[in-house]
Each structure stands twice: as structure tokens, then as C-alpha cells.
Length: 305
Ligand SMILES: C[S@@+](CC[C@H](N)C(=O)[O-])C[C@H]1O[C@@H](n2cnc3c(N)ncnc32)[C@H](O)[C@@H]1O
Image 1 (cartoon, protein in one colour):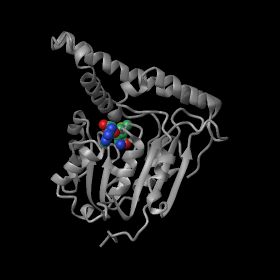
Image 2: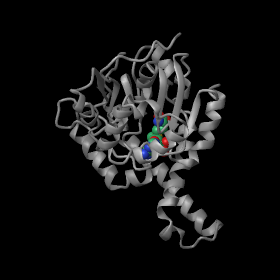
Image 3: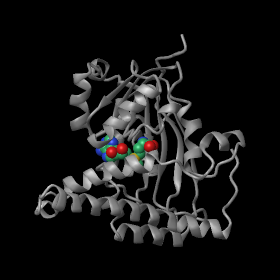
Image 4: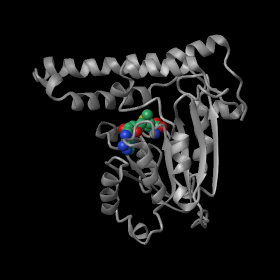
């Protein structure tokens, strides 16, 4: 896929776009607090239930954000023209490689679900801890005709939450034998939010079967010390962090070196079988990595039989 560097005007706009998102998320937080005090009469809620209100506000914000049509040409249009314009264009070719038993980490409202309809996919488990998103997610499962394949796991991907939820679904037989569980694990814009990212990625690696694939499209820390990065964009990342980006946006962090953590996760097996990762949008406060990491070993497929 081709990519043309942004013009100066586009670059300046890219610096401020996360600010608009942050402002939008803040309005949901304020509204949630006002509702608690004046509509529900919970006068002390802003002080005593801060995290609960914040999580509810983020759930409502994400439903609004992820279901509002964007003015930009969609991924299908960009795919037809074979060019990358925004981060959404990176996702379809990566998710096209999903097969077998799939773990979708933090599916949100199911924005990526239309990309998961291949017959090579046998079952999908969506680990989504934000209960405020489950109604939208369930509706999307129905709309995409995936009711027989898709199970929502109402939990975080952190092992202490995920393992009991998987046990409940009878998913841990192979894992107990040390063979992993999933043929594909999907991480789209979620490793920025998980607690203790290094540990979580190592746990996900363990859950991959031999030959399994980790499909990743994630925004990361700006590589400002390399020729592909931008010190200005890094400063914007720090500023957004200071203004409460993580607080208002569901624990999302802009400063994570996700690429290093992903590569290191396979160290105990002498590395991954293959790492196909590309870096994108190095001048922006939301630079991305996108690609596929394959675990050593022989995969279970073929899945198209
Ligand atoms: C930015 S949204 C991305 C949603 C979806 N992957 C997409 O591409 O539209 C991040 C999602 O990760 C979820 N999330 C946050 N922490 C998580 C965790 N520890 N385990 C699983 N999901 C998590 C959030 O609830 C939210 O739905």
C-alpha cells in the first residue's frame, strides 16, 4: 500500500486532532458528573465515585465516537485506491489474516467485526471489560451474522480476569497441556490501555498456539529520536498526557514502546518465527505500528476445510 507524506497543513492538523478527541471525551466526563449530582441526586458522587463515573463516561463517549461516521474516505475506499490515509486503512489487510480460534482483545463496540467474517475463522472470543459497550457489541454480532461464532467475555485481558472467563467457556483444555489456546489474537488500539503492558503481552503470547499469529495495529510513543519520528509530535504527546489523556480516554497511554514489548514477549522461545511490523505516521502524536507476529511451531490449520 502506498503512503504520501502529509503536507504542512495536514501535519499541523494531525498535531491537534487528538486534542479535539480529548475535549470531546472531557465533555462526557463533565456531563456524567452533572447527571450524577443534579439528575440522580448523588451529590458526593464526583468525590466518592470518581472512577465509576469516569468509566461510565468513557463507555458513552466510545459508543458515540465509534458509531459517528467520519468525513474521511473509509478503509474500503482507500483499499480500492491502494493507499493509506489514516490508521483505519492499516487494519483490513492485517485482520484478513485471522483464522481458527480468535481472541479479540478489547473489541469495544465491534467496529472491526465486519473484517472478521472469513470462513477460516472458527470462533471469536471478544474480551471487553467495559460493560457499557456490551449492548452495542451484541447488536454488531447480530448485524454481522456472527451470533454462532462470537462470544463476549465480560472481562479484562489480564490473566487473572481472562483465565476464569475462559474456564467458564470450557476453553482451557489445550492451555493446561501447555499448547496455547488461540490461533489468532487481535490487538487493535488496545495495548495502549491494558495495565502492565509488558506482562499482558507475555500472557497473550502464552495463550497463542504454536504457529499462532498476533495481529496488531496500535498507536505508540513517537520515535522522536529516530529520523522517522518528530520531536514536536512527542511534545504534543507529553502535553496531552499532562492534560489528562489517560484519565478521560479509558487509561489510554500515548507513550508506550509497544514494538519492543511485542518483540521481547517471545524471548523465552528464542524469538518469534517471524515479525512483520511496519511503522506509520511518524510525524504525528498518534504514530502507529501495524503487522503480524507469528509464534514458532506448526499451526493447527488448514481452516478452510
Ligand atoms: C480504543 S478502544 C478500541 C476498540 C476496538 N479494538 C476498535 O478497534 O475499535 C480500546 C478498547 O479496549 C478496551 N480495554 C481497555 N482495557 C482493557 C483490558 N485490560 N482488557 C481488554 N480490553 C480493554 C476498552 O474498553 C475499549 O473497548
